Structure formats: C-alpha cells, structure tokens
Image (cartoon, rainbow, N blue to C red):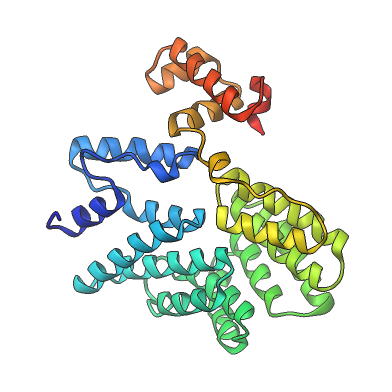
Length: 315
C-alpha cells in the first residue's frame, strides 16, 4: 500500500497510475469527466479528485464502494487531524444513507459531520441532519439543525439557500404550512440550476403528499423526482422514489444492473454531446478522436439503448 494519504486512498479508489478508470461509475458524464481528470493527474503526478469520487459514490447509492472510501478517508483524516476531510466523509455517509432510506444510520453520520462547525461541508451536512432527524423521529435534533441551517442561509439568500431552507422547514411542519413550504422550495430550487436538489424536494413533497392521502398529486412529484434521479444516476434516491410510487399504486419498472451499466464512460459522454446537438466532427475535435470513431461509438449506444435517432439521445 502506498505511503501518503492521497496515494492510499487513490489505491482504494482504483485511481493509481495503472488503474485510473473508475469502472463502477461508467454510465454518467460526471464519471467520464472524473476519468479524464484522473488520467491527467496520473500522468502529471497531481492529486486525484478523491473527494469528488467519494461524494459521487454516495449520490449513486453504491454502498460498498462509498463506505470503503469513507472509512479509509476518516481513518486517515483522524490520524492526520484533517477536519475538512473527516467532515466531508461523514457528510457523504449521511447522504448515502438518506438516499437509501436508512435514516438512523444517516442521522448518526450527519451528527458527526456537523461537529465540524468551521469547515466547508457543514451547510450540506445540516440539510442531511434535518432530513434524517425528521425521518428517524429525532425531532429535537432536527429542529436544532434547522436553526443552525437558518442562520447560515440567512447570510447568503441565493435561490439554492432559500430552496433548501424551505424544504428543510417543511420537513418539520404540518398541514397547510408544510404544503406552502414545499411549494416555495420547488419554486426556488427550480431557479437554482441544481436538478438533484430540486428532485430531492419533489421526492420529499411526494412522500408528504402520499401520507396526506393525496395520491394523484404525490404521483406527479414522485414521477418527476424518479425521472431526474434515474437520468443523473442517483440510484439510491431513484429507488426510494420508486418505492413511494409503488405505494401510490403506480407500476414502476426497477432498473437492473444491466440497464444501468451497459454504456461505457466514453459512450455516455459521446451520447450526451450528440444529444446536445454536436456533430460527429465537433465531438471528435473535442475528444481528440476521429468522426468515424464517434460514429462507431454512437452505433453501439443505439444498439445498447434501443433508440434509433440522435434526437432521442437527449432523453
């Protein structure tokens, strides 16, 4: 095992000079960008984007891989007194478990992450603590976290801050107050440019609507959330939305491993660029490959996905 902290974690993540390709993340453009960055880092000796890989694994709901990175990061951060790295790892664990619907485990991880008051991930960790506390029945813990979150969001009233604050308040509200807050959250987060946060608001709102016996309204929110999570590869949250949809009486097909992982990172990236309207020569110029190679990859994409036109790639 290599000696430095970054080398040890790189080895666990599979990011060493001979193994920089992150195969388990292969179907989303973010994964392809990480692969490209890791290839550059491997050739130049720069530090790999391990924190990004860790959080991506948490969003993807890949428990085994995420926990391996999280545990190694926490151990090394503790040994080297790195509060930022430790807080980020605990936040990622809370995110992972909220996505998987394991709220007690998310609560414990979020509480640990929120002990680091002066480091970057604290704002996002507080949102995980509010959700985990509300879902696990630890309402006093959630309420304290909400007060801390409100103090922070008051300092920078961006669309994202306002949307996340309203969403968190809704989790600890009832009746008409909760309904108004969820709608406010959707409004602000729709303007934030962060689709995953909007999808999480739709998921929470849909869950609340179902429990209010408003099944038709719940389905609209849950369908939208499920579609976004599937499209962006947030598989844990997608499964949570799918379970809620099933509880409303809607039939939702569960995506299989074969469906999720049948595109390589290169194929996913080329499909995304083609879906954005790029021509084969334009894609080739951007990726330093020939237009003929682009066409070859696109034929494989069409065969694997069952679609037959570039226009359909956007979906």
